[in-house]
Length: 420
Image (tube, rainbow, N blue to C red; front, side, top):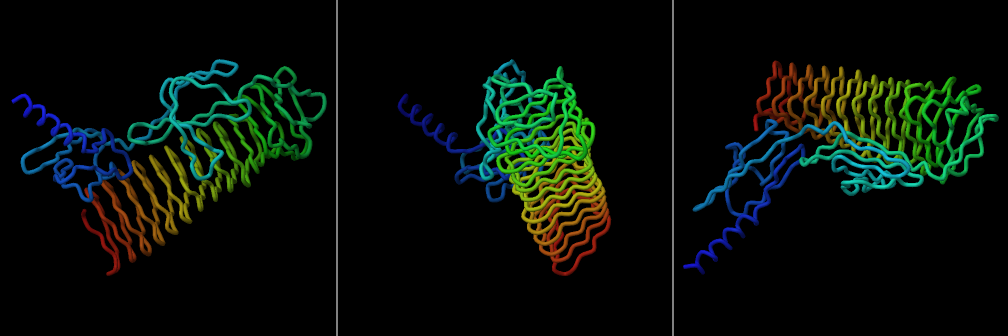
């Protein structure tokens, strides 16, 4: 009898562990492995053994697996809302203590920019800033943050003459401020230029800094006059100051990180990673970026093209345009217009846009959106869960919907608009 019970328990354990049941599901397809059983999520049959959080309400749901002689019930949490912050403290000279697990962002790499998960503490690098974010159990990402390089072994620059000759690790001190800059200054690849809070760098005429190494500008640094920062080669540029009248651009470079800025123009191209957060910017033009993140910002005109991965979290915009094989993940966008085209892939949730245009092979998936006019033009395919749309115009496209309110539909004979 004991032998039979042991065999039964072993078989039962094998059945349980043969399942692949996630605890959390976010905004990507998650495959559920349940052998030869039938699966039901909230009473709806699971197709292709895949579940996506964009097709269901946020919160706890039931997953039922049913066979001829057995039945299993699991609780699964739908969570498509990104985390908002990472909590850490810095203890000079080198120690950083993390309050929660973070995901390192590898800005040195254009192909594999998501690094390892880190907990506890780590030491700051001698010359490179450390970029990371909070990634929750549903794989939503948010709360992008950066830690400067170590300030050990650093040499202050003299302010008696305009800044020049930056070849090692140098710092501009508030006690020696103001500093002056004339013409264009180059930060070489292995050099680092720090700004101390309270520093003032005066531009004599139109001046600029070409960043091929590392530049780190904290809060409360001011730049009287016009100054431009141009990032190229292996450059890493970080700015957290509001007091800036000029332009930030890139043609290459590993990293551009902008926080708390009030700027007219940001033009970035061919940079590995670009992060812009808590800023007010009139015009952003981004193209050929490997990984672009925009968080908690107001952007009047946003143009993105040929960018591998884009995250937009909590953005106010007037005009947003995305084109050219771009993957974009949007949470809480408020915009007058959004245009996506040319075989791009868009995930959008909890957003309000007056005019939306998808054209030329766009795949879309979203939930909890409110659109004025939605135009689907030429081989666009996708679906919405819980949406309110005043008018849909479809040409040679397919829209699948569930709990979607549409006031007016105009479509050709080759288009499909139906429930799923």
